[in-house]
Amino acid sequence: MTGFSEDPAPFGAKLDKAAFFAWLQRQERGRFELKDGHIVMHAASTKSHWVVSSRFVMALAQRLDLGIWAAGMSDFAVEIGEDVRYPDVLVELLSAGGPQALSSAAPVLLVEVLSPSSAARDLNVKLAEYTTLPSLQCYIVASQDEAIVWVWQRDRASGAFPRLPVEVAGIDGRIDVEGLGITLPLAEIYRGIVRP
Image 1 (cartoon, rainbow, N blue to C red):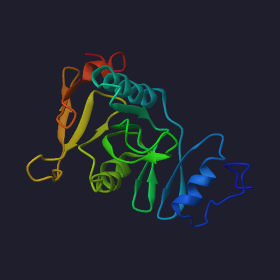
Image 2 (spheres, one colour):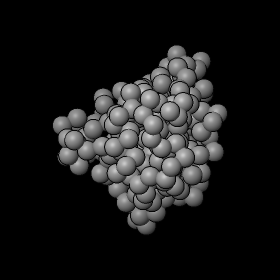
Image 3 (cartoon, one colour):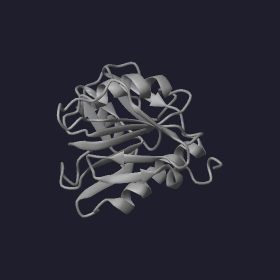
């Protein structure tokens, strides 16, 4: 027994993606990712983290054609090489992959909401990983405590992501997601969480 699960598998054991997904399907709860062949468990979310993540999904769902796009929270994986990540929010074409897929075939937008334990990983490690995905057009890192986000968008001319993000701050701020042709007002995402 591992202490994390009744399933005796593999904390400490090196796994490939297929073994990780097979093990993950037997888990009843917990947030796990695969990094460098090892299972990484993540802490539970705070209410603010959960609210900000769900508000991103709601704002996206109101602006996207849901017959074309799928937007959801952290239950759907993204494969980056041999690693498996679970971003807080993911958008991809509804037609990408199949209905039984366990991971995104081509994420277009990814959002991570910062927590004290994830800040360095979200702003550095995941930034480097996610921006290698050919389909990705926009990566957003959002505070859970104040109306501030950092946005990296793929340049249409060069196809590259900028080294530094665009910072959008304040309850009146707006995120223009060029790859999807939509604008996300921070007021919708942070209403009730921060004071104007």
